[in-house]
Structures are given as C-alpha cells and as structure tokens.
Length: 192
Image (tube, rainbow, N blue to C red; front, side):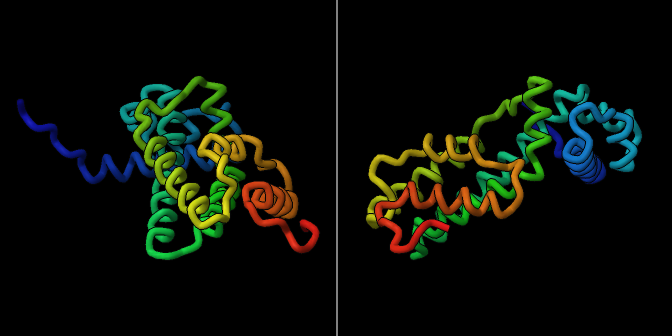
C-alpha cells in the first residue's frame, strides 16, 4: 500500500490561518459569520477554505478539536510537573483556571459547535486529557489534599458550570469556592 504524502507546507500554513481566523471571528461575531468572511480574514481564497473545510460544520469541528488538543497538552504538562514534585492540588487548581479562562474566549466556538452539530471525530485528545486529570486527582488524593471521592467527571462538571460569561472577579470567586470544595482541608479564614 502506498504511503500517504505529507501535506505541502503552504497547505499546512493555510489551514492554520483559516482556523485562527475562524476562531477569532466566531468568538467576536458568533457562528453566523460567513465562510467568505473567514476566508478573507485568513487571507486565502474561498476555494482554498472549502478545500480544507467543505462545510462550516467541518470548520467548527476542526476548531473545537484544536481547542481539545490544547487542553490535553496542558493537562499532560500539568501531570508532568506533579510527577517531578509539584503539589497536585496547586497544579489542578491552576489547570482549572487556565481552562476556564481559555473558555471565556473560546466559548463562542463551542457554542457554534453545538449550534451546527459539530463534534470532533477523534476522541484521543479527550482521552489524553481525562487520563492526565485522573492522574492529578489521584496524586492529590494520595497526598491527602483532595477528597477521596472526587473523580474526573466532577472536574468536567465543574468546567460545564463555570461562569465564563461573568467578569474576572466572579470567575476568581468561583475558582476559590470550587477549590475549597475539592480539598480535604478546611479554610482557616472565610472564603474570599
């Protein structure tokens, strides 16, 4: 069986430019933004956009998949820091904060995915993220910092309920409350 050819460098660059433009426009204008507007913002011809992404659903699915890949990469890097001695609870809290803050700007892309029915087809990155977060939770539980009944599903539930439409001070308050709920330690001072 012949081996598939690697994509040309200009095709890879165009795909990246299209995804970046789509993410920015969908974030600022919503999922109704036109494919021609995305092509113009990316600096590519409309035909080039359609060669990479035949439908808007395909484009949104690719943008969502890119976001999931970034989260998985971050989760694995976080787990690596814990493996070499960082405190799991601190790293898990920082990871939660990064994902929530990224969701503030990317929530329009995720909303567009729901609107258009787009789902990333490959769940490998979701599985990578889940495995890394599970390892963080287990490390925090072994250290006695995280409640023994906390699971990765609890973390996903927290992500889904994060106040991404609220100002930074509200998101920081939410994170403080969530972290307090995950830990075995009782706060010595009132939760701020």
